[in-house]
Length: 268
Ligand code: DGL
Image (cartoon, rainbow, N blue to C red; front, side, top):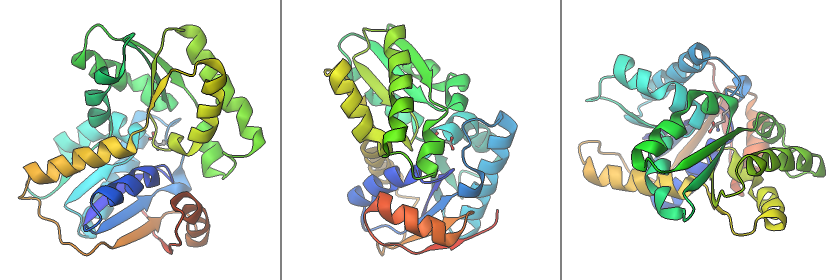
């Protein structure tokens, strides 16, 4: 079974694409909705929460876990890999590496914008990793602290959300008008894509937006091909776990997934 973890609903944007690419595998999704958002929390707290989730998914039988959360990938992944797991029994992968690897091929101006949570921005992970790919890239990061709370509250497609979507896009583009590629560096943000595209269309229609779902799915496909030792049982099943109320998750996740699911409540 492959474990997919996020602080909340955002990882469903990754799970969707992974299931389209690898439909035959079994998945266990865990959203720590009761403690989301992670993006405004300290390094120690994000590490501790992420480790609890990783341990839980491993105990349930996952030997491969994707941190479908940039904040956890930026702040907890490396420490967990170095300190907490035996790589012969469990592999934990993140979403930042596959995203930065394909970014240089998308830009002409070499000016990249990164929209992410305050935690991911403060970690500088995108800047460090992107510059390893191409030292000539000019990277501007913009923290969007209100976007995850809007999505977790189910308010993201309402008119009230427009103010904050426009505010952060404006702030980014004022700081660097030459940006031609924007990374959505938070797995929640694709849920705001209709609004982001609408606003960018009015301002700078030629900007290309990088969403992570397909990128992470293709990178997992490649990983499983290169690591046949991490054999997975097949069946095409997906189980959904949440630290919030099962009913709340079931209702909201069904909207994000456009299919009916039934979630289970767990404690971490
Ligand atoms: N989906 C998480 C990410 O990719 C959201 C983090 C949060 O809970 O703030 O960063």
